[in-house]
Image (cartoon, rainbow, N blue to C red):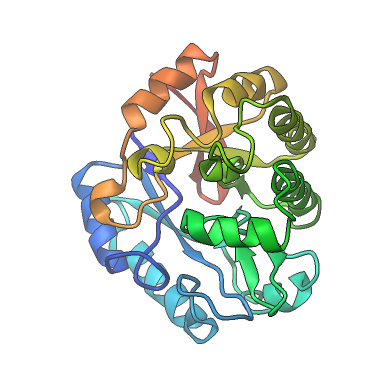
Length: 281
């Protein structure tokens, strides 16, 4: 099966290379499609979201590549967007007005420090601990509850095409703080989220990023959850959440094998603006 990757970050956000470098590498590898997914802009400072003033430039660059690679590689222009229940309208206005090929909905922030700074659950563990103590009162369950509650609200309100790294908060588990993803409460919250997703047309990405970074020895979501997703009929796509061209198809062969072992026979591919099933060979 020709591979695809719809989760790709360039220098427009926190990626390490220009978009054309990813396109060149994808074409060299014989990939069927490459989707760009810059971190959508937000209305507060971060070190990794795209600057709101560069949204138009990003859109134009990717669309020029679409034309340049016609016949060699299908290129798509998307975003990875966060969801904020309290400021969603203001944030979404920063990237509306464009015809995005797709949106990946991912949760990176779940709380606010007393100084007004948003608490990110996808950074260094020391930063997570600070928020866990200050915002969650060192409760081992509350971060999980809030993470999945916001994810479920995102599914209902934003209705993204793809749900990104749906259980990523598991990377912050340590014996002295949050419970692991094998804990009954974690699985209960994840299952409730998967049931919400199953009632929609959303696709769940099977991400190899955590394995690549050494954050986990499993996928986002984990193999157990993928087995449950297959029973529920939730469609999937494989992604590497690539930040450099060499990462584009990291771990895809093993991910395809795992999907077959859990009962999946197809993954989703974007073709001419429509999502289609493609067989896992």
